[in-house]
Amino acid sequence: MDYCNGTMQLTDTDNSVVRLPAKFRTRGATVRKYPMKPSLNMKLRSEDYTEEADSALLSMRSCSSWILDAMAIDRICMRNRVAFDIWNEFSRLPYDTEFEGRNGTEGRFIELYINDQYRGIYCLTDRINRKLLNLKKYQEQTDGSVLVRGVLYKSGTMNIQNQNEPCYSEDSATCVVEWHNAWELSYPEEYGSAKVWQPLQDAILNGYNSDYVKRYFYLQNLADYQILVMALAISDNWGNKNRFFSIRNINKDINNPDPAESNRRKFVITPWDLDTSFGGHYEGEYYDGNYLDWPLDPIFNNAPYPYGPICADDEYLAILKQRWIEARRGAFSPSSIREKLERYRNLFLNSGAWQRMVDYYEKQNLRPLYVLDLSREISLINEWYQNRFRLIDACFGITDTEDGIEEIQNSKSEIQNDEIYDLAGRKVQGARCKGLGDSSNSQLSTFNSQLKKGVYIHRGKRISVR
Image (cartoon, rainbow, N blue to C red; front, side, top):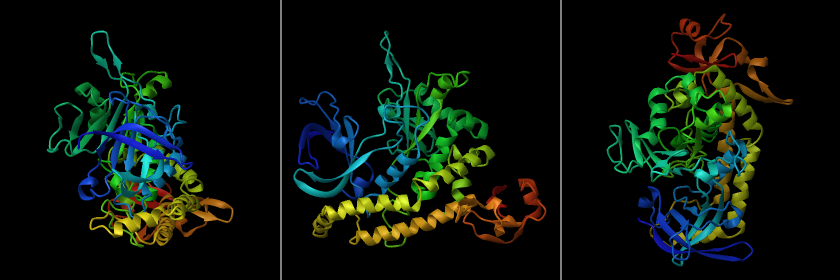
C-alpha cells in the first residue's frame, strides 16, 4: 500500500505518552499471507506531514523512520531481535560512528493496536540507514546535479518481475546484476543511475577470486557475518537476499596508499531479516523440537558472492576460526544465548502480553503463527542451539577441556591421526590420509580418490577436495 497519514501514540513503561503525526504503510511479502498481523513502516512527520520529524522512542537513537515488526511467521516472536542482539554484541563496523560502530538494528518489544484493534506483540526497531552506518551524504552541485557518495544496496527484491536478464527498473532504484540476483538502492533511493550501481556490478561480475575479495571487503566483517549464519543456521540469509552491502564513499580511490582513504571505498555487509534463525523457517514450519538442521557444507561449497572465492583462502579461514573462538566464549556461548532467549520469554510472560496475544488470536478465524507453551518452546530451542554449537566446534576442530578451549590439532585426540572427518565432525569411513604432513589438496585427492568434492577436516585443519 501507499503511505497514509495517521498518528502514532506510544505509552512508555512509566505511563508517559508520546503522540506524534506519522505516515504508515505495510511492508514485506509476509503481509500477503498474514494481513491480520501486518508489519509496518512508520515515518514520523511534522504537524502538516510535509517534513521528517526525528524522535528518540523508548531510549533508542533519534530518527524519523521506524519499523513495526509483526514477526507473524516466528512462533516465539523474538528470533529476529535475539539474533540482532547477538550480532550487535559480537560484531562492529570496521570504522567509527556516533553509534559505537553498531552494524545492526536496535529494537524494543511493544503491544500494538491499529485503529484501536489489538494486534499482539510487535518489535519497534530502528532501520539500517545512512546515519547508522555513517555513509557520506549525497551533495547537490551548483549545476543542479547530484554527486552520490555513500551507497546502501539491499539484496533481494520483487520490484522487477523478470529477473532473467541484467536490467534496471525505470527509475534505476532497482538493478538485476545477473540472473535472479536483484538489488534495491536503499540509499540514496531517489538518485539511482548506472554510475551508482557500477561498484556493485563490478564486485559481483568481476570479483570471483580471493585477491579481489580481500581488496574490496573487510575480512573480519565477512567472517563475522559467516559466523552469524553458520551458528544460528540462517539459511534464508545465505544467498541473494536479506543482506545489505554498503560503501561509505564510492568516489574514493581503492588504490590510495592512505588506508584511511582507500578503506572508504570498501564494502561492508550488514544482516537483515533474521527471523529464520535458531532453526526457524520462512513459513514457520519448524517448531516443537523439530528445527531446521541446516548442514555446513553449503556454507563452504557453492557459497554466494563474496564467500565462494574467499572460503578456500587460508588467511580468511584463519580469521574465521579465530572469530569463532572469540564468539563461542562470548555472544555465541550457549549461556549467553540462553540468557537472551529467557529474558524475552520472561518479559512476554510476566507482563501478560503473551497470554493476551494468544487469547485474542485463539478467538479469530485468521491468525499468525505462535506456540501456546512459550516456555517449552524456548527450552527446546536452547537444546537445539547446544547441538548446533557442538557442530560448529567440530567444524573448526575445537573442543572444551577443564582448562578451557583446546584446539584438536594441539591435542592427543583421535582426530590427530590420519582419519578424515566431514564438517559435522563425523568420521568418513574408509578415508585415510597416511603419511601426509601438509594435507595439500593434490595429495589428498591422490590418496582419497573415493572422497566426493567438498570440505573436510584432517588433523584439525580444513582441507578441500576439488
